[in-house]
Length: 258
Length: 258
DNA sequence: TAGTGGTCTAGACCACCGA
DNA sequence: CGGTGGTCTAGACCACTAA
Image 1 (spheres, chains in turn red, yellow, purple, brown):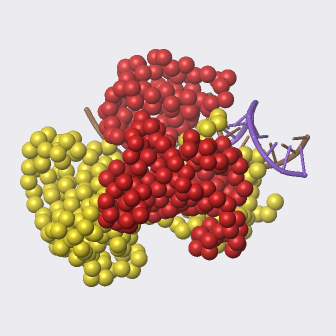
Image 2 (cartoon, rainbow over the protein chains, first blue to last red):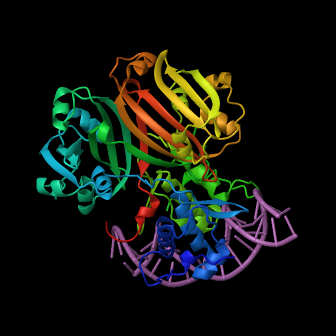
Image 3 (cartoon, rainbow over the protein chains, first blue to last red):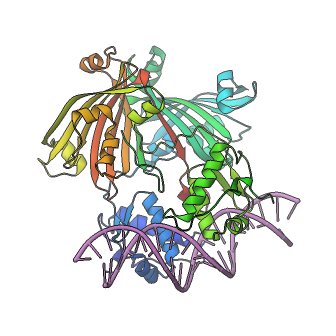
């Protein structure tokens, strides 16, 4: 029974506000990312692990379940827990294009083309479940990376949101600003499609007329289930795609098909 | 503190192989779906609930956490648990075009254009982590709905899979056949992009040359984390889009500011 | 058969929220 | 302040897997 070397440096800080299971999970995740825990490695069983670390079994289980949900571990009853084959890590739940680009080291830039407060358009009012005529913030931004346009982002935002100044929007992603304003994003519905570029869109995005565009519409909800934001975005298909990692839901839901 | 009427009919069967927390979760989910638990309803607190039902608090918590993950409940410390606003229910983890179309009443049809077993192509071998020359099943299917082509589906499958006869493939979705063959799909990685149609693709899909296509590549894994299938698909953008429901990952509720 | 993860219990203390 | 959910513990029994 090898003592996992990846755990040798683990110290749980019981005084920290960070939950113990989360400290363990982060430590394991880092060990996997760094390669100290190689793919296909078998972990020690829960009892031993709990004993080594000085945590109870339920706490260790919670950390492992978190990593299973995240797709880093695979567990089989009667067998054990193994590190999963490494794949491109793309959690991608509620992401922002800005953050994705920044994380990829691609130095994103934003130009605000329009930033107004106006009575909501009827079609948007219906989508956001707002009374007709409610004022909303309407934004149009051009997102570039490495000096080339990638996307035109159009957003409609509910409520009186401070901090959405044009300079701020050119420095940060919209979702980061919303979080800074105390808005908690909880869920979203997206629709991804495609079409060809009009002449005006092609000009803006420095593409040829008729070039392929990815379209993405996203309706975002806060923690109380209220619609917060609706966006209709177009992306230059030659320079952007959407990456998704999907897990079969734990519990009942059937594995998928195609 | 009203006793939730939705729980009046709840009987937990301790002899059942179905976990107790899951029995409770399903009961609550059904109550929410049927409207007996209306949106915004406040549930009794965990202790009372556990007491009423005759379960321990951790078990009740597990059922509730399951429904929170599923987006049906929202919990706030110091406040309580509420039923979330109803949204379009679209779990959509590992979805199947065939099932989506069938569920929409659109009578999907499949024509198998090619169904062969051959040594794997080098590029596919790398993606599937297979030794060079391993035989794989290669499929090309044309999926139509309402008499019009929607997508060309190209798949490469690992292993000796019985039941993938051309007639079977024209009657059922691929994932349904895999499940029938005992394959357990556990996770997938997808990439969604767009491009314009070549002349041959346009002819096959009954579109104009240069029409917008959605592209989707999907790598699917079984419950042991082994790559099982790789698909490269193209969809007529005018007739298909991808719908996604996203939830903020539970783990992101970690302490500390963003 | 021995060992694994899956489930369940009955406590406990704490951080946060609203009145 | 009282009440809520968030976390944690130390046991227990069971179902499944592999040898």
